[in-house]
Length: 66
Image 1 (cartoon, rainbow, N blue to C red):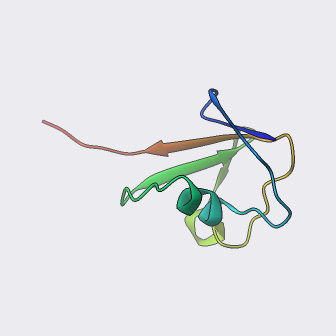
Image 2 (cartoon, rainbow, N blue to C red; image 1 turned 180 degrees about the vertical axis):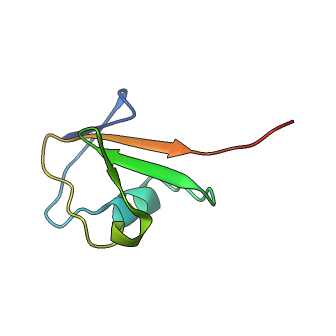
């Protein structure tokens, strides 16, 4: 299991990446910051960085307002 945004527990699977997790959770925001256990993942690594079992993942979408 992994914990997402300190509230959702998601079943972990071998080869899970931030890109796959974003797709699974249907996040489509244009600007998203991903952290795994407090470490920011660069967007170019979303498709390749593995998420370990038991990880705490934060998916933070950036919005602007005025």
